Length: 254
Image (cartoon, rainbow, N blue to C red; front, side, top):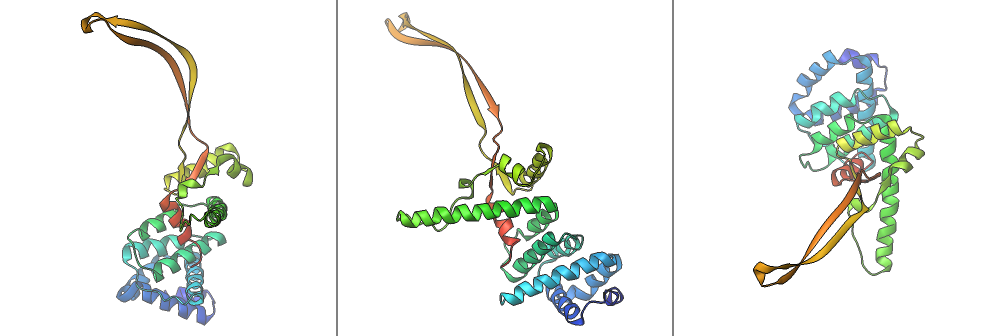
């Protein structure tokens, strides 16, 4: 592994800091696992990994955070999958996720966060950035209005802020096909959820009559005949799930 690192011709300060961070994250297994990774990684993957870890280091240093050891169930896929990423925007998200995971309390969903990020395309990442920006803006508006109305909210339910399919499609100049593909993936990852479906009840035929029930002493009853049809259509509105909102926040700077 040392030969591969040396061949990258990166500043020694960056390499030393990266090695120190890896040592902290891996704990006692650093040399053993580092050797396994060194044998399997290609030069480009190692270069990606060092870039991302260096960015994560910078984020933690800037915010006065110190990393702690991460369990292998999270760490191995984190290092493996982040090393495959070459897109700069997604590399930044990996760096943010690493810095947040490495410097915060673990809640047991860190592995899921890693898998979710690894399944995002660069275009989907842009869509999430856009939606997160819109969410934060609308949330701040709602919270500000709550102060003026003397009904203070500390936070709001994610499903109160809705995003339109057509808005996403227009914003990113997408065809209907690819807008559906991207949003379907964000749904399958548990980041977005489709709003309640639209159900239209169309006019139909109905009639009724009053009948007498002789068995109940001529008691009157109403007999109704209804002929109605309904149309079910999937809503084109979406909102962040609680997990989705947590995920996008974990992928931004501390």
